Image (cartoon, rainbow, N blue to C red):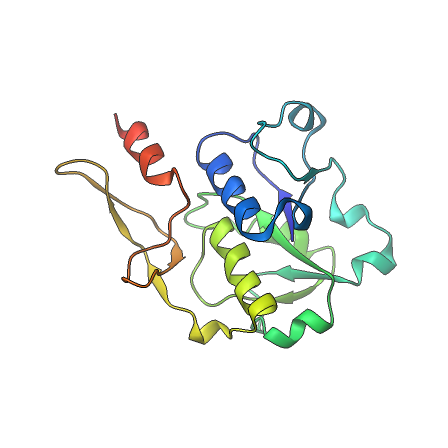
Length: 189
């Protein structure tokens, strides 16, 4: 799993989502690419996976042919069988981009084969986890349970609506990354 880092830094919400990705797919299965040299030198200690300043677009062409770009505008849905044809899944790592400014277009121009994860924008960590469910566990997208735009209570009378699709847990609640609810409460203080 490769996240082409499109954020200026890694703090707060970004760090929470990145840590959640590592927890789900493992530090040896996750690469953060296109990280600025300054950020690569100062990455939070909680981000314990491969971090590189190199963009996937700079890879040799033979290696690029093994990359599948997750792109909301793709006409083809990610299928469990895609695991047989690609070695790398590429995600554009821009968080909180609502409405979407189509940052994936930067990666789309590189000519990668594309797939989508459905019609609704997901948080980046949810997209990685959903792709893992489809490819590693063989669960088709339409069999996963989701919650769109969950409303999260952050105070006695305060809520915040997250404008993304999240996986649902067995009780029908959104599977938020550990620490996100507390981060939202702190941001609201």
